[in-house]
Length: 242
Image 1 (cartoon, rainbow, N blue to C red):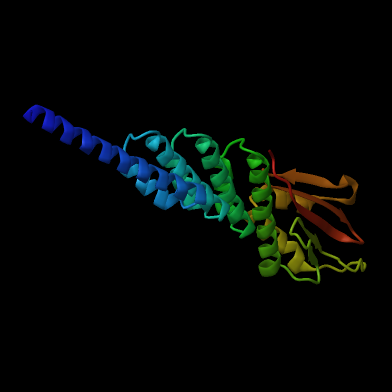
Image 2 (cartoon, helix red, strand yellow):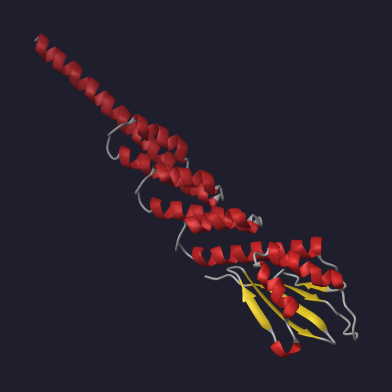
């Protein structure tokens, strides 16, 4: 009789616990379907292995990460997707977050930071192309800075986008006229852009018979020509080697 009584008590307790778990599961599922993923996750975690609660915890974490991504909180989303390992397309979403973080840096004109981030992404999307674009923007900014600090608008011209800088030692083509500041600025510009000292020497030895001469680095091309009546005309251009 005593055994039968204990059995009945145990059965009642099991039924009550199962009923509670079922009720909590349904509540958690309703919260999930409403998009209340944080609250749903807490309830599913408390249910341990009841039904598919473990899988639903992962689903909640994924959707929380996706909400962060859609809200453009890319760094937060990246961390959340990384914690999910290979769940669904979490690995791909980590790469998407890193790409968007790099693009935000680019749009903020933090080109050096963006370049590093795109380089880390290898061939993801157009990351390789964006590395080149970042290098071009960095190089263009250097030309603009050189123009502003080392040049005079009387004999120098800079492209609006910084893609080229031109120097003319006789801008008005007056016979025997010579802007010495323009000529000697070439040596400083060459040095800052990474051209060897021999390039400035070649510029000084150029004659009208030589035509237009060219030298280049991994980032810039410089071309120049000389005529006694027109002076030296020099063009620096951004040219990134891929």
